[in-house]
Every structure is written in structure tokens, then in C-alpha cells.
Amino acid sequence: MGRFIARRLLQAIPTLFGIMLISFILLRVSPADPVKLMVPSDAELTEQDRENLREALGLNKPLPVQFLDFVTQSATLDFGKSFYYHRPARDMIFERVPNSIQPVLLGLLVGVLVGIPLGFISALNRGRRSDHAIRVSSTLLNATPDFFLGLLFVLFLAIQLKWFPIGSMNVVGEDCVLCWDRVWHLVGPVLLYANGGIAFYPRLIRTEVLEVLSQDFVRTARSKGLRERVVMSGHVLRNALIPVVTNFGGILTIIFAGNVIVERVFNWPGLGRLFFDALTQKDYPIIQASLVMGAGLLLISYIMRDITYALVDPRIKVR
Image (cartoon, rainbow, N blue to C red; front, side, top):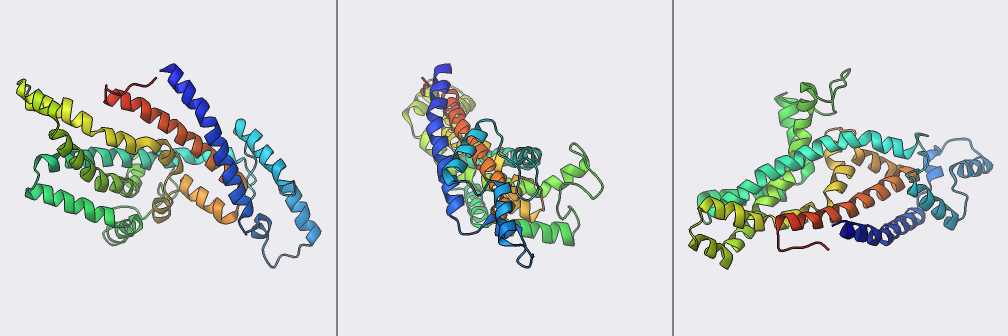
């Protein structure tokens, strides 16, 4: 196992370097100029003042030198200071990580706990009313945009019925992590994050369970006199969960990046909003830090996925 992890980490280095190179080139060839975006159009600045600002930001260096600085700084997670906030980009990202982890993790958990049992129930009741109801409901949820569901939640449950807060993480003047107020603010974002799992997993699990039920090893297990509960849990469900493990390949990136739509609708100060604002402002340090950290977590997620394969399916070996 140790050799497998070490080999995969070494293989990830060229991939990470390629991601850094491509992202660096795309940022530099995009038409907008960070200095022009920072300075108002009516500001009385001379061309020399603009050049001094570019020099202060390190934008006057040749592109190869800028890329070399980017690579060397990334090795120590030092991505420089934000152009707009004049704070280390790394610190700004780490401050937002807990904000993004809370709703994303809870949403993924709710999606799995609701979606997988619904798919299992749908497969076991194939052709019945419950099967049709689950399939139609999951299809409708999958076809409905997240921003529309979020706006409906805010409009009806928050504004009209006043059951939930409109947005943000806490009531103005309050700042807590484990309190009832935070839980109340988390309901909307968590449900929106969970929508993807509730819409996707029932159809996926239903298909996989029906396929596994037709396999010879399931008929053999039943012919040996095993209880139906043992057959379903130990043989059918375990093999049907392999595609779910594949779907979780980029889970760390999802936790890290958050969701711009959810955070915009509910005014949630997470990493998604920070990254989106940095893109619109051409804030290179924050953009590059987010891309490097996100790519690193994505590669680690794939390694974790391969290890989980071996835990779920004993036929799969990692070497």
C-alpha cells in the first residue's frame, strides 16, 4: 500500500505542473488587465504611476520569470498577497475553508443517506408505484437548476413564511460555529448541496442493484441458503456501491472549492465566492492559490478513491 501511494504521488507531480502551466498561460492571455481593473477609469494617474503599480505587483517581469516565481512559491504554499486585499492569498483561503466545509459535508452526507436507500428501494420494487415515484422525483430534481431551487427556498420559506433566515451564516452581531443559529442558517445551503445526491444516486443505485441481482454469484448465495438480508447487504449492495466510490473521486475538491451558485443565493462567505470575485478582479494570487490547492486535493482524492475501491471490492488490489 505504501509503495502504491508513493508511486501515485510521484506520478501526480507532472500532472500538477501541467495544470499550473495551463492555468498560468490562460490567466495571462485573457484580455483584461489587473491594473486597469484596480484603478477607476476616472482616476488621475499617469502612465508612470501605472507602471509603478505593475512593478509593485510583479507584473512587469517577463512571463517565464513570473511562472518560475509561481512554481517556487507554490512549493511552500506562499502565493503572494492579494492585489485587492493586500493580504496573503493563502491566509484568505484558509479562513474560508471552514465556511465551505460545513454545508458541503452535510449536504453530501444528506444526499448519500437519502439517495442511496431510495435507489435500493426503487430497485427492489421495480415496476411498482414507489419505483415510478422515486424515478420521476429524482429526474425532476436533476432537471431543476440549483439556483432556481435556492431562489424558491429563499422566496417562500425565508421571505414569505419566515421559517428560515434569508442568508448569511449568522444573525447580525452573532458569531458562533456550534449553535442553533448556525444550524438554522445551514438548512438552505445543505438542502441545495444535497439536491445533487438525492437526484443522482437513486437512478445510479437502482441501475447497479438490478444489474448485480442478475449476476450468478447472487443466485449462488441464495441457493446456499443465506438469508436475504445477508445477500442484499454483503453481496448486492457492496458491489452496487462501486460506482458511488467513482463518483466521490473529486470529493476533496468539492469540499475545498464550494459552490458559487449556493454561496451567491444564500450569501454564504465560502471559497466559491472568493474564487469568483478573484476571477472578476483578475486577482492572480488568489486565483493561482485556489487552482493549485484544488488540483492537489483532486489528485489526492483520486488516490483515496483507488484505495477505497480495494476496501469495497476485495477483487480489486492496489499494488
